[in-house]
Image (cartoon, rainbow, N blue to C red; front, side):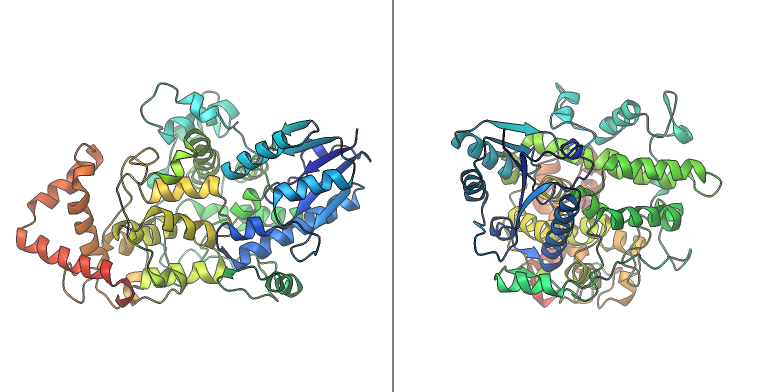
Length: 510
C-alpha cells in the first residue's frame, strides 16, 4: 500500500520508529508553508531556524534512503497550506493511505482531523514518541482535584521514571532545591563563552524575503548561532554538561546586563523542534552528574531536571486539558494594548530595554527575563493577554503554542485566574534589583516609590494591587501584600495611582 507520511516542522525526531527501516512504498512529506509563517508574526531567526532544521532533517532522511517530497517556501508549486498540500500530494502520487504524527498545537490537531475526514483513503495517527507523558496523563493525575499543583505532578514524574531517586526517596533528601536557585551573579564564577555555530544562512534568508514572509527582529545571516542538526544539538547538550551545569542551579534566576545566557543551556529550541528528546537530555545530564558528583551539587542538576521533567511536561498537560477555551481566558479583564517599545526595545526602563532588546536581537531570553521583567510589566500595565500571547509566540526561538500559551497566559499573566500559578507573578523594582544589576544603569531609581525619578514598576505594582484586589481577596498567598496595601494612606495611594495611570496611558514616554 503506497503511504504518505506527513512530518511537521516541529517533528524532527530522527529516532522515531517511522525511521526504523526504509520502505519504498512510503513517501515522506515536508513543507515550509505560509500557513505557518503567517498565523502570527515571527522573529526572523525563528523562521530561519525552523526552515534550516527542516531542510537538514530532510537531507539526512534522503541520505538514509527514504523517499522525501519537500516543498521550500518559494517553490512555485507549494500550496502553502496543509489541506491543499496533502490532497494534491495524495492525488499526484496515487497515495492509498495517509499517516501523520500527533501535532502539538490544537489548531493543527483540528485541521489534520478535518483533513483525515475529508479524504477518501484511510488515515492513521501515530504518537510523536517525544514526551514522557501522553496528552491526557496530567488530566488523569489531577482528576477530582481542585488545583493542578506542579510540585505534585513533578514528584509523581520523578518516581514513575526513577529520575534522581534513591529507591523511593529523592536524591539529596529533598524533592526541590528551588530556594538554592536564586543567587545574584556579581561577576563570579566565570561564565564560559556560549557555544555558537555561526553558520551562513544568507541564501535561506533571501528565499524568505523573496517569498515576502513578514518577520521582525534582527539577524546576522553570516553567523547564525542556533543548532539546526541533531549533531549540533548534541554538542550543545554536551557543552552544557561540561561547562555550565556545575553553576546552573545557583544562578538560573539571575539577571545581568553583560551576560545574556549566564549558565543556561539554550536547549529549548532543540527540544521543541524534537531534534533532541527530553529523555536524551535528562539522561545525559543525570549521567554526567553521577560521574562528577564531587564537582556538581544536587541543587544544580535538580533545578534543571525540574524545568524539563516538571514544568515542560506539566505545561503540555495543562494545554491539552484546557484547550481550546484556554486561548481566550482573561480572568483579570485586562484590555490595554501592547506598548510600541515591545517591537523596538526603546524605553528608559533599563531592565525592559535590555530584556526586550536581547529578545529582538537573539530571539532568546531566559525564564526570569520573560516572567519577572517583560511579563511582569505587561501584567502590571494590564495588557490584553491576546496581545501578550502573540508577542511571546512570535519573538522566541523556542515558542510553540503548547508551551508558550500556558507559560504566558497562565504563569506570567494570571489570565487563567490561578489554574497554573497560585499567585500572580508581579513585583515592584525591589525584586528586579535583588536578582540583577539592571537598576544600577537605569534612568529611574528603584528605591523611590513615587515622583518623576521613581521606577515605574513601583507605582504600577501598587496600582495593580488596588485595581485588582477583588480578584485576590480569597488568595492566601496575596494576603500579606493586600494587608500592606490597606495600610497605605489615601494620599500616597492616589499619588501612586496617578503616576501608574500616566505610565499606562503613555508607555512609550517612560
